[in-house]
Amino acid sequence: MSGRDDMSRYAVVTDSYFDGERHHTDCPYTVVIEQGKITAIVAGDSSRELGNQDIPVKKAAFIMPGLVEAHCHLFLDGGQLEFNARTEYLNVSGEEMLAVARSNIAANLAAGVTLVMDAGDRYGVNHDIRLESRLVTVRSAGWALRRPGRYGGFMAREVGSRDEIAAAVREISRTADDLKVILTGIIDFKAGLVKGEPQFNVEELRFIVSLARELGLRTFVHCSGVAGLDVAVVAGVDSIEHGFFMTSAHLKSMADQGIAWVPTVSPVNFQLQRPELAGWDEQTVTNLRRIVASHLCHIAMAADLGVPLIAGSDAGSHGVPHGKSLIEELVFFLKAGLPMSTVLRSATSLPRIRWGAESAKIEMGYKADVIALSGSPCDDPRHLYSVKAVFR
Ligand SMILES: [Zn+2]
Image (cartoon, rainbow, N blue to C red; front, top):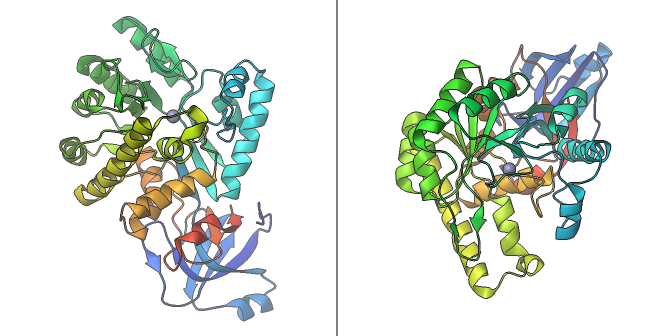
């Protein structure tokens, strides 16, 4: 992988490409990049003419916009599998956490991810890494919101009354790119369901969403289980994160309202793949298998109904390392039966459009934010795992 390219003018000749919306497969293409901007895309291999003009030419088998990881926690190392070490880690210094975040950024870049959304941490590592990360753009939610004593201690601040909620949203909005709300707990795998009532009711969540919008922030909501989904969908949040125990009725309403879904299959799938680590018994493994299978079914349904599906891995969670887990998430979408162009959109143009982030479209006049793979994922999805260069 070539990393940053400092040459002010160069060209990439590629066999085929995905521009962020559709595939271009007719012939080789020459993409000219000047001062970081795409200034020409022409059909054919122009290597010789460009060579005569002393313009360096790089060869690629396939190029596409840099990938987007829509849900991760940069301060956490998802590859750390020891439960004790994960707990002890929460007491290390900010500098040590920042070092972990730096290596997570490097892992994202190695996987072709050039934009990540951090979904919350209480230590402020997400804001710190946002300041220094260059080749990977970081969006940071800062602190999330949760109810006192409820799930989300490692990423959220506690809010009680409406006044407290309003004050917290205003304070978070001063430094955050998006607002993260913890609406439900996590799945109780043993019971095979989400325990407890949602942390906020419809009125409260509506209030949070509308205040956040007034302040220019979209609201993305940690939510699993039918009770939480009922609240999130009626309150009209911008995005539902995780969304386990999804139903077709919720998906229909999400499609009508344009609510996005980031289904984060990876953390639950890891529990299914490595049940011995947490000591899950047979019944729990059966629950896990059912939950993952149903999730993939609903992902297919979401695509059919037109729900904006966005890829995010929840990297940093137990068994979910940064970078390659986003690719696994794309593979889950493929496994659910989604066409490759829908899958690639879910991790390129769609999140950037919805978040108002700078476009990475491969088209004349756009900023170069391009990755090269070893081949077209349409020919073989395994090419998604093989990033050869990042042109940014
Ligand atoms: Zn998360």
